[in-house]
Image: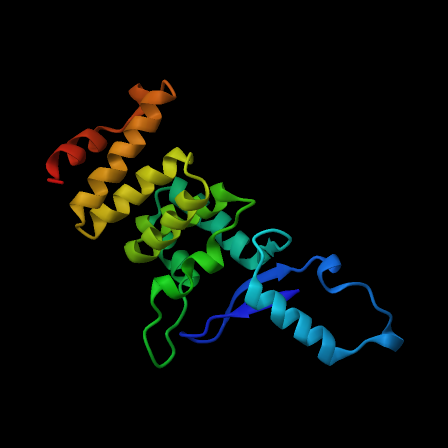
Length: 198
């Protein structure tokens, strides 16, 4: 396993990845050389290949997301905000900026819908900067994830960035229309797309 901690906040864990055995090779306990393996892992961390690593989802975080989704469906927005506050990292002595951890911790290549849900609920809870950071990562990895554009647009709207909101709303509308789902586009999309000057 490769565990990565945040370097600019409270040094808590931001990701745990399973490193393929083939990258460090097989060894017996009698021939194990800790220094050599550490150097190999260090080199792997620095080179950071795009493939081969499997990012693991922490079960407590997955449970909290499920809990937040249930609360959201019941209309308990204040309770959702309380749960989503657990997704934020404490700055310790300094401020913990979303760009320093949010995508690394909550963007899962194998589960873009999960990552999108986290981004959506962060936005619904008023954590717009965190939502924007995560949803941009989701879209960069999965540009066809239509609902992520709507969630991103709503978060941009929340920080009063009407230009970026309009761009994301238009992209969402375009993808929905292309998929033959134009009738399902919420009214706010057209209203907010028109209201912003590009």
